[in-house]
Amino acid sequence: MVFLYACLGLVILLLAGDALVKGAVNLSLRVGIPALIVSLTIVAFGTSAPELLISIKAALEGVPGIALGNVIGSNTANVLLVLGVPALIAVMHTSEHDTRKSYVQMMLGTGLFIGLAYRGVFDWIAGIILLVALALILGDQLREALAHRRAGKADEDLEEPEGADPDMPWWKIILFLLLGIVGLPLGADLLVDSAREIALMYGVPDRVIGLTLVALGTSLPELATTVMAAIRRQADVAIGNVIGSNMFNLLAIIGVAALIAPMEVDRALLRFDIWVMLAASLALIPFVFFRRDLTLVWGVLLSVLYLSYVGFVLVA
Figure 1 (cartoon, rainbow, N blue to C red):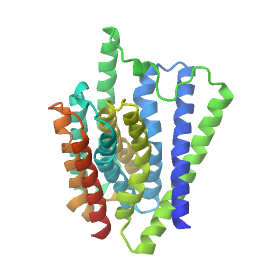
Figure 2: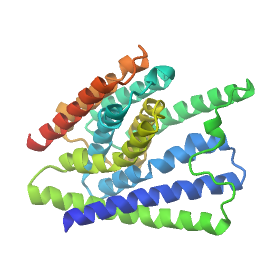
Figure 3: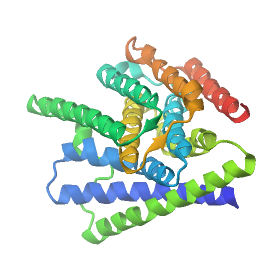
Figure 4: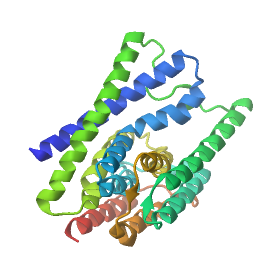
């Protein structure tokens, strides 16, 4: 039953997160917030809402291994699994998109996160530092997007944020918001409590559950989206989405959770898992700087590396 509750919590989290994005995006557009701002902030926060609620709940419940393991494991899965599996289906022409600047920002955020982790705790000081870094990056992205718009080169994607529906009635907007606001904490409660029970049942550390079950679960939406895009031969922008998601996980999710409750860092995370996350991030260099496409060979390599990592974590 505990696995059933964990799956139920995950499903509620994902559905509630999607509902919150739809409601918040359309409410923001209705009250006059520019689509550009909505795309850079509200959509980004909304799509990360499940991970955020899990981390906050875990921090408050005194199981920081789940909170930190979720983020570190999700970032590793985003690179090795979310990019690896679709490459098994179709070649991803990542060479057609320039993600160098975003990648450098992600690596700086990764370095900042690792440096703060070696303090031994993510407290309010670390939270403020991470959120200030996020604000600087978002500000730079906003400045660049506005410059492109003034030059007449606005990205069409920014004009139609994810979940935008100009014909959505007010009652539906309110319903989506309520479903998100009620569902997210309910799903987080179920998933974190179930994850903690599973850890106790099998005698494994909380961080292992966070790195595997929770991290993989919260990465499933990105994986499903990228797989469907690969089937439609439209997965070329996947690497940019992974970079943005990883940067947001480190800076926003841990930043907010650290402000709410301090999280001690498990020494095992510092010895191994955090360096696997860094290695996975560095594995993007050939695709970002040398414009290599993600081919079948790369897909096999990345997928095997992820399965090997999860297997090692579970048996170590």
